[in-house]
Image (cartoon, rainbow, N blue to C red; front, side):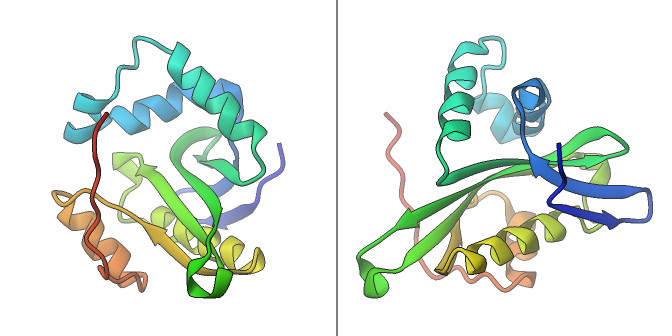
Length: 160
């Protein structure tokens, strides 16, 4: 599978590529690999994740990306493109489910992923890139702020 990006991060080449079905177990490990994810994810039942993967993979408005280092999946995120009437009918990009393996955090992989996503959004004509991060993830807030993101809105969710 072709890489979208390949950068030497000191401990090897970190590359981004589109996720394939075989990546799903490792992606789920990354999603569940913290206190919030462990409580949210039920990785014992793969069927709903497989259905979601198929829907994401089939829709050109969505990209599920994995980051690899040394042939191992060590990071993931989803990039979605959303049309909107506000802001003059502009498109926006939504970044979701950003995860980097704990051993790789602080070594530039996350910044490479977000930078690549922002570049893709620009190339698609988006005028805004948005993401949400849980209020308890203070380190993630600092990370996104260093990359130029601003906490400009109060996000709200309703669990169904």
